[in-house]
Length: 264
Image (cartoon, rainbow, N blue to C red):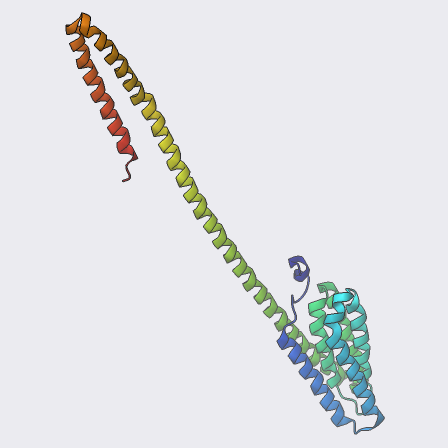
């Protein structure tokens, strides 16, 4: 599920605890209705309708994978079933908890606009039916009570899902930062090696340019001096002195350059 898709919903996921709470609410309604209706055809019809409600509720995740537009049909049918379950004799308001069950699914499956529309329909259905049955004073009060309870439960589930998403995003960001830091360390090590190699090449080039030229000059001078020994020995001896000085200078420069290569 994409971030954009989940950010447009009240909650990004349906938790197992929420499903457990919903099944408990359905069980409470079933027990209360079974207690109020003393057997007979009415109780059988109620149990059949409740069985259809539970079947649709449990199969919704599997059908939604194949039919993306299923929620609209699903919530319409479920709302009709809930209202039907509330019109039997020995009228009670416990059927209203089924709207809370549907409210959790609406928050997880529908966009914010669609969710608000369905919530409006649920609240309107509660208000109208409870007002007709219990009067204009008690009816709206009961509808308000169920609405507040449902809003609190759904809001808590939404906040909890947002907290989980924030923690997951934070962990992902930490992992990305650690990976980026590791890459920076590796790049810094590579840059250091490259800088060392470039400095070494520079020194080699400098050694070749300076000392190499002097050695080449000494070699020429030595050859010239060897030829002078036969014709002008005194001049040859002076040339030998110059060769010694050049040699000492080249050796000194070489030691200086090699000293720069030594680690601190």
